[in-house]
Image 1 (cartoon, rainbow, N blue to C red):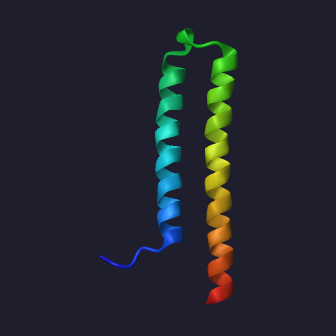
Image 2: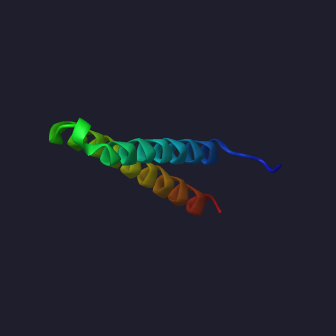
Length: 69
């Protein structure tokens, strides 16, 4: 195996969190009768927060790697 940097580990971790959150959101939509609109809205907002955080982290990593090479 190759060398895994701290930034690579962060991106893999946020990717896993987004995947798990997406699966939970899908489960919620499959059982939509058990949730209120407010609960589904909070779940969607939390998922989007994870996605945006992951994109921002990847962009920051790309910008810092572009400047160092």
